[in-house]
Length: 282
Length: 293
Picture 1 (cartoon, rainbow over the protein chains, first blue to last red):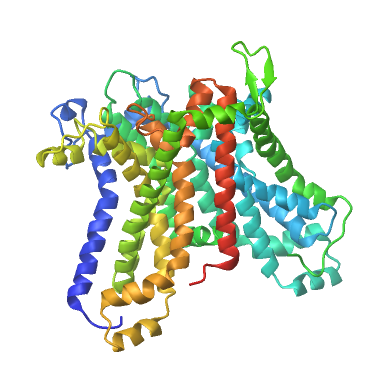
Picture 2 (picture 1 turned 30 degrees about the vertical axis):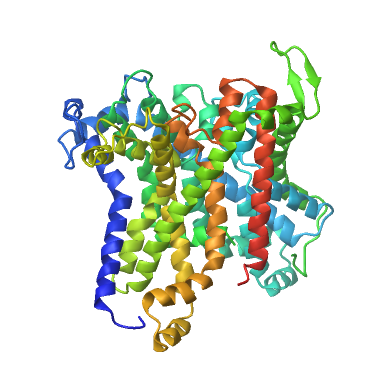
């Protein structure tokens, strides 16, 4: 610190505490509501202190689901979300790392053409080509399937760039030495490049897991059967009940369960998360 | 761009890029091409025949006052969201940068909203502002503001801006804090010796040095507000009341899936594609060169 100004330091702390409170308030209120009974919420504004229905609400939502909007049990939706998040994260990493390997370590016709083709995916988010993409999925009979939920999303320009960038920093001598020792491209990749990429893969995995878990529009259009709903899009069914108020304590229980896994990933892997976040934008 | 020493192999490199390229072609490039084709066609009511109409769909689109209004609304929405999210995060990042003790605790407590899905962020704020049970609408009622986003379009708009910005705070905070910590201490110390107070130092030294970060975040936030906030709106206000929260991405979805206007929806898709392409180029140009100041 440049100079000692106790008043400003105190003010900084106060602003930080206020900021943290503003950021955390909605989640706290959601938690309070998720421990309430339907009758507790009839009286108007939600209280600030939890009620006693915590176990009942969470058990109902996890194993039975909300009956009023005939949403499936949240445990099922969370399993779907998990499959989708893992499928997308692992799929993106695998296909990106091998295509980056080809682009950096091989010389072959159309190399740059392929590179630019991968680059183009950056400019074509699902949101801008919803209808035709839906048609492709429907024609391929991929609606209501885990393949339909994951495969179309696993092309990744950012992951490919990240690995390419990293491979370019790997010393040339490693490859020369490996070749002198008689290692072929596959052996070099598995024994030398993969172990070197471990931290990058882990950091990217954290970001991509969150990305996959939080998908909304894609599962919304690809799934029509309840049994393939993911939790993030499933909660919408409980909010948008026609001609009635949402059953808030169930909605909040579901919302909290839906944000728990990625939030835990961020909190427990904070270092990797920040690394992944910053590297992605290089 | 490439290694000096490379492997040469007849088919292995093609095998390695194949999965990525196949998915890109089937699920990205082909549908995008279809959108472009669809956008110059008109289909009759039964889907039996299509007719090539040049740019009629686009002309109709830009002659449609409701589309232009949605366009304008999207721009206001994006800049409000970006401004709110960035302003709040910058304030917090500057404070966190000052603090020596406990900085990492604050950082941890601010970082997790990144993990919250936009849809869930929307649902949380939808509840906070709910006219019956919401604590904020309750407090607003105390000071004489009657809040009902089910009826009042401006309030619904404000609601989605707040929800969208809230989710983006942690991202901006991480980057602003990294940017602030990269500002050379010697410059700040020199200014302090010359008698500049904390505010003067911020405006004359730190803020200008932070401009590459700020510009980068502005682009990222605009892209986020344009495209990733679909979930915030779809899960809460559904574009209503009376289209007050309908943004471009929501309109494409709505016109395509609910209204089944294929040509119009495709033309909208193409317009959006142009926007993404422009934003991506801006972003990449910046990454290549960094902003000079």
